[in-house]
Image 1 (spheres, rainbow, N blue to C red):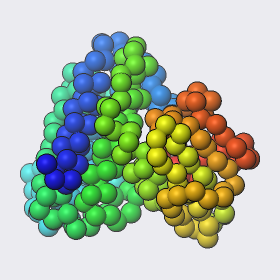
Image 2: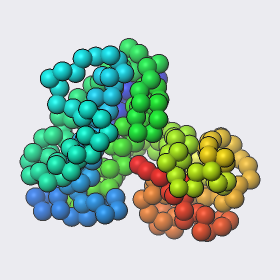
Image 3: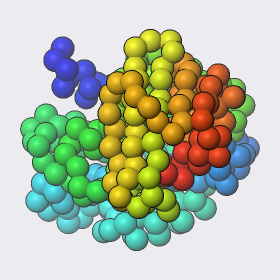
Image 4: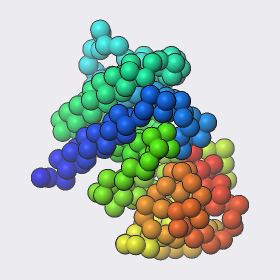
Length: 264
């Protein structure tokens, strides 16, 4: 299997893993809180489903494909309206929509990655090539599947293959997230050091831009810990001490990490 084929396969695996989490919700689990602040399971699933619909629409638009007759968002604002409406749907309809939207989005991404990987798509984080689109949706499935665990009532093991690639890929996506930061224009640097395998990175924000660099270096703060712990911390799912991550440097800057790199 080529590297491209493996990445395509991983996207489908991540989607299936997420949908199993959706299917694991009990009837009363849909109204229970999740790890995504202020959202219950219903709103998390509605968010992912309408996100899948939006990304499929954006891919069709980028490819110049006529989407007449397709029930898809016309723009970001329409996606938000659909999200609000779907957030009030019955669980059975929401589950059905989640499966259909995910299956169609994955199929569209797979086809585009294989046929036109250089195609640029304008997504909420900017204009990016198809491999980045694939990475964005893959992370979305893993993050929000994990978010559902309190509503499900039990933990679900993150796919074993994900963290090794997911941590580095996610750090490399952080500069795009900085564009939405309230700290844009300020300067700060963050050293991220994996302790259970190879991996060190520096995230530097300065002058309205941010860059991710591989390797060791000085920074305003350093976060050291296992890969999975680091991943959930930089994704805003828990405090460093909850995931075995040590913080060195300014603790207030460390606690504001997601303000510098907001989302997903």
